[in-house]
Amino acid sequence: MTAAALAAKTREAAWLDLTVFEAAHLQYDPFDHVVVENVIDPQQRDAIVAAFPDVPGPGSHMPASLKICASFAALLRELEGDAFRAAVEGKFAVDLADRPTVTTIRGELRAQDGAVHTDSRSKLVTVLLYLNREWNAPGGRLRLLRSPDLADSAVEIAPEAGTLVAFRRSDRSWHGHAPFIGPRRAVQMSYVRDRATALREERRHRLATSLKRAMHRLLPPG
Image 1 (cartoon, rainbow, N blue to C red):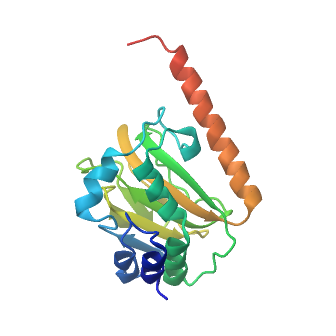
Image 2: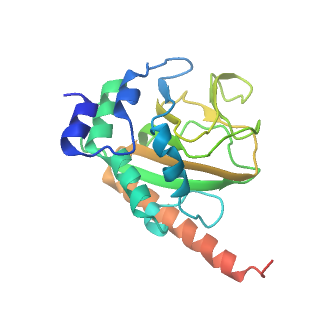
Image 3: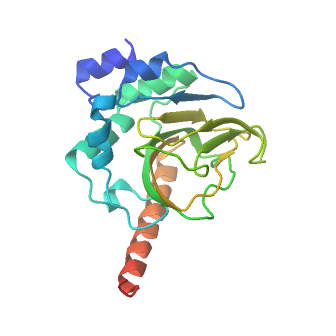
C-alpha cells in the first residue's frame, strides 16, 4: 500500500498531498534529498499560512510551547504520522519504525542564522516545510552544498509556502543559507535515533522558548 493510499484509508492526510511527494524524484547531488513543491494544495495554502502560530522571537520552538490552532495542529500530526513516515521510508529506502520525531517551528531569523552545518549525528532524515507566502529576498534561500563553503551550492530553494525539502543526514549533508533578518516561517521535523535524543531536544527547545519569553517581558515597550 502506498503512503497516499494509507493516508486515504486512515483519513490522516488533509493538508499534505502525499501523491506529489511520492512522485518527486530522489536526487543525489550533493547528497540524498528531495524537493517537493505544492505539497500543500494551493487552494489550502493561504489557510495554513494564516494559521501559522506566533513565535516569541528567533530560534526553534517546540509546538507544545506555542498556541497552535486546530488546523495547524492537524498539519503537524500529518507530518509526524504513519502515512508520511511510510512515504519518507519509501523515498529514502530507510527503516524509520520506532524512530521518534522531533518537530520545531521557526518564524524569525537573525543575521547569524543559516550557518553551514550537516545536522547532528542523532538525526536520520530531516524534513523542512516552508510557509512563507512568497520569497523575493536573496538571503534566506536554503542551499544544499557540496562542501562547507556556502558558495559551493548544488541546489538553492526559495522557502515559499508549500515547498518541502527532505534529506538524509550524513557527514556531507552540508546546508545553510545567506543571511536574512526578519520573518521566515518553517516547520522542521527530524526522525532521530532514539527516545533519549528526542527528550533531550525537546527539553532544550522548551527552555530556549521560556527564556525568550522572559526576556521579551523584561524589554521596555516600544
